[in-house]
Image 1 (cartoon, rainbow over the protein chains, first blue to last red):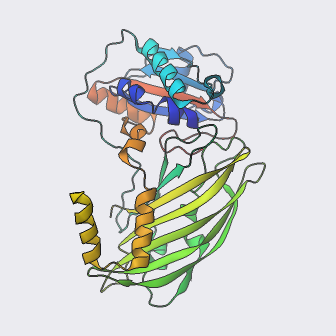
Image 2 (spheres, chains in turn cyan, purple):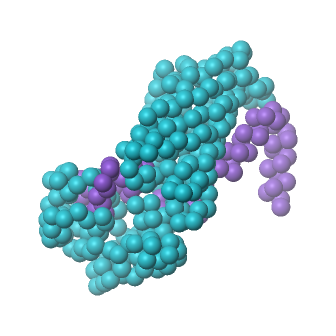
Image 3 (cartoon, rainbow over the protein chains, first blue to last red):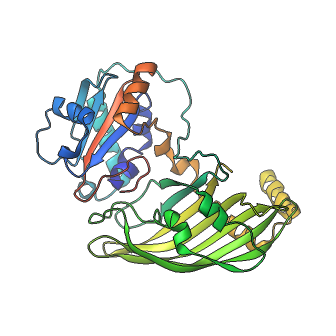
Length: 275
Length: 81
């Protein structure tokens, strides 16, 4: 579905058409996995019992079906051209919503990114996955994930004046988000993640002192082909001058991931939240 | 131009160690800008249940996207399987 996120829903004119809506989704392996409220909408639309890759429904606040369609979203039919896909999807949205009364939205669109809120600081990290250009125009919309921070990880990342190793297991919840979407035969997990990360004191400035964490990480996905890739990780850990408690994090990982016959650059930007 | 000069002066005066600044620059280059994140300007709810509650208060319709995948569900909001 990365083409739906990247080239259809994200087409700027489609975004504007969808401003009046609260947008949500259900996705699972089969329609039998749907929760009852979603299944009720599905049944109202008379989609039948066959597998449907993608369907759009418009419902009211009680879950009453107002409109529905199974859009034509076939990247090969558009030669994987995102503009052609975007225009087609917009046209299908226009047909779906024709003559439907919609509220006027006066406010400017706001960025509504995944976020993490918690008591300790940092509360967690946000990871932005972006991908280099590729033959089939995959991954045009970034993947954004958040991972809450635990007290154990804050302790593991506390300041030390000595060079030391950061165990892969300690930041594994971050690393487990560093994979490309739409691995068709994958389950969203890893067979293994290995590597070595070294944290070294990196000086100070007027306000903070720093550790730099550097190392290479190797990933093996849980898909049938056990796809593998390696990445170079660089992380800045920032601390108050008089405390060993972690203040904030910025980092980046650069890798090349396999997708069919291609290797596609994957870049992960890591930032602590809220600081 | 003025913004760039001010930014350069701010970096120079902060005295941030060069190896740290190099990673911060890599991070800044890797973080997608707003123009790449238009998808996240839609008004997302994390479930139909949440969307219905909000729709009732805000008098707005809901677009519910349905998708089946052979291997696992997709998180349309974050992007990952």
